[in-house]
Amino acid sequence: MKHHAFRLLALAGLIAASASVASLSAPADAAGYTTIGGNLSLSQRDFRVFNNFSDSTANNNTVAHASFPGQTGAVMAVWKGQVEWASEAYAGTGAGDGLTSNPVLGSGGANFDNTFQGTHTATGNTNANVHSELVSSQGNTLAYTETPISDGWRIRYISTWTWHDGPGSVSSGIDLQGVATHEIGHTLGLGHTSTSGATMTAFISGTGTAQRSIETDDGNGVKFVYGTKSATKPHIGALSGSKTPGGTLTITGTGFSTTGNEVWFTRQGNLGNPQKVTGVASTSGGTVINVVVPSTATDGDVLVKHATGSSHANLSNAWPMDVGSAATQSEGFTELHPGLADASGAVPYLSGGGDLTPGTGGFFIEVDALQPAATGLLLVSLVQGAQPFKGGTLYASPVAGQLGFGTDDEGQLILDSALPTGVASGTTFVLQAWFASSGGPQGFVASNGLRLDVP
Image (cartoon, rainbow, N blue to C red; front, side):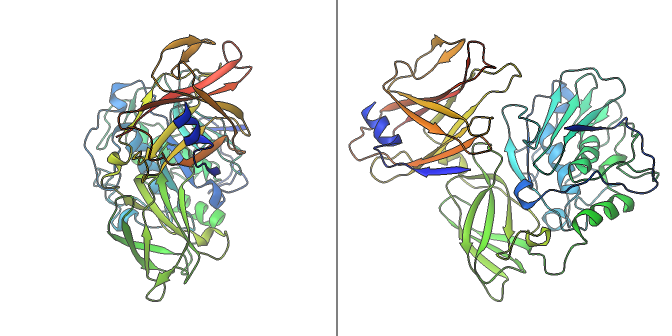
């Protein structure tokens, strides 16, 4: 992700002045697990959920669980499917499935773990690593995974089925967690198997909950792709200390590098990439890491990457983390929806967080253009408007200034800045990103608006 610091001659100064498809219905010819080729590198370990599931039963679980902080309903169900493939029991115990028949989440036993990076506001492209519902009827197909996986994937759940989020038994309709677990296997590089009872069998019914728990054949497959869990793989055993942005978090475990570790957090803004704190040392023989929680961290999980390279065995297990007072970190930031979508329904996303206190604070603005290497304009206004413009709504109206920018090859950009002492309390700024796009209704697409209210 492009990451730029702008002191107010740039952003704050401007403000102050103004594939292929693997589906459940495809046949499997070989006995035992099969592979589809490729694997997920450490740069592709993120996943998100666009919670556009239309069935009420897909989001009727409103009971929070400590292992899945900040999420309920369909998002929690998919998250559970993801961690079932983890290298070890999730959060130490693997609790949270909701079934006595599957008491432990985290059964992969391989050098594979992934990071929850929040919800998303769109389906994303085919390599955005996003789960979402597809309004479609596709015969007996319940869901499918779009590959190749080397640069990402996308999972679509067909809307004609009635999806259920659990967490307990599902007596009718389709168990979202179980189908997610199967499809996630494809994102890891697994094909179908003819081994009876395995999660990766081609013809699962989707009813009941048996597919939630991966079996021996499934585990053998993920171990073949990523290697059996290494004894030297970093391991997180507990979190303590402050979990509030700006506080010092203590990570206790084993296998950490003496110097140069990376600590990965779930990032605010739902951009897909974890927030990484780099160059972190450990103490006590590689068993303790103390790290300052970044202002961009939010509810999700924490992982540690060893300093020595990018092999599968260099990334730790994920550990859930409820980011204390993270909600207050976004105080003063209000999203204004909707944005202006392209023909596929994808909407660029603008978010922010941090401290808007003039003279002392520091804040960030994140842009997800949904298109690689996009160029656009960040428009700024001193008031919130609602002016019809190019088929959408111009929230930064009247425009007081604009900043041209370019995103990285994943369509993302983060801007760091701070407000100068002279900005008066009570001042309002409104930002919105606009892009030229042939897929837009009048040749343009736009993000949501973002209002900043100075305390």
